[in-house]
Length: 420
Image (cartoon, rainbow, N blue to C red; front, side):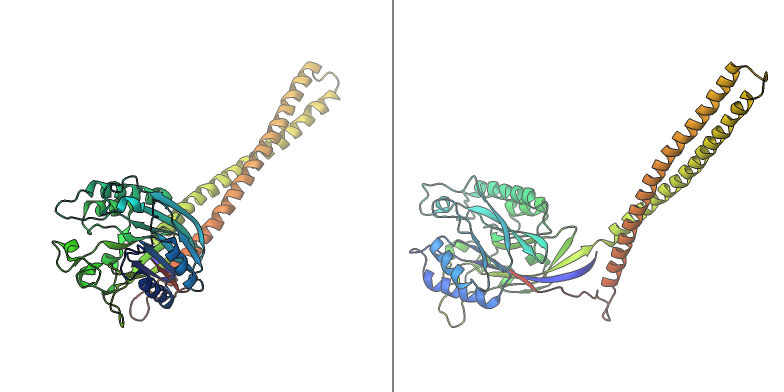
């Protein structure tokens, strides 16, 4: 695809546990996260496990100037924990709570009380409709004896169905969150294969972060080592997934993670490492598709032109018939003044035939004239379409003309950043 009007966008994703009175150093970490988001100036921030609305309101006040548009998704007993902060106007929001999410009697795990869900915000980004999803699936407490595997599969299925049925009109789709699944786990493969979402970690040109993209690492103050068994160094369970459309193509330029400890602090932001992705949004025109459209329109226009010529010829014949009928009508009128040349019945019959020719010619002339107007209007519209396609095709080729290093010379529109 040749691309024009590219737009660089930065998506940062922060994942952390924030259960007030239960999580360690919760107040201090919210303060740190607020400073991080305000400093990095991502376009959109997607957060999970913001269980307290009081903490959400704290971040909302702190980020009021950098991220004026926010939404907090409410569900379950203590909430969904999902929050969105955006530089760009949020047009709409929708929440879907997963049907299966643990058991209420498993108090130690507590997932059931959290109301795990997927939240959607529709964001206007430079005239593009972005469907941005934030989600948090049920945790995997034991790799060997995973009693919640079925629940996560159901949640994955509901998530992919939700994305499929709500993203049809989107120019671009981004999904970020704690999926609590390894890259090749069944639920993860199910989600990607049925939605077309692409993993930024495998798509990015540049990665700067933990080994193998791990987001839950051993070198983290809040990580319990038993949570990583049998993986000693860490696991990758947090993701940024993306998908473009016919109008916009997406590319992950860079992806990074935090790396455990924070400078000048004795503890990290969260037990999970934050993800930040820089995405290029390219308003794309498919040269092959445009070229094919031009060929089809040209073929159709040729048929219309040929039909126009044929119809004009028919109208000329109808006009000749009309004038022939008119001239023929003069014959019985002239014979009527010649005595004893023919009977009145013969003159009447001859006059009727001539009148029929005159009326038939006139009706056919009107019919073919109407057809010609329709054909001309259609041909004019096709010409406009053809010219527009030609302009698009020329623009695509110009925008994709190679620069001195052989790469397409693309000029960015304006900066765009998003964070979770």
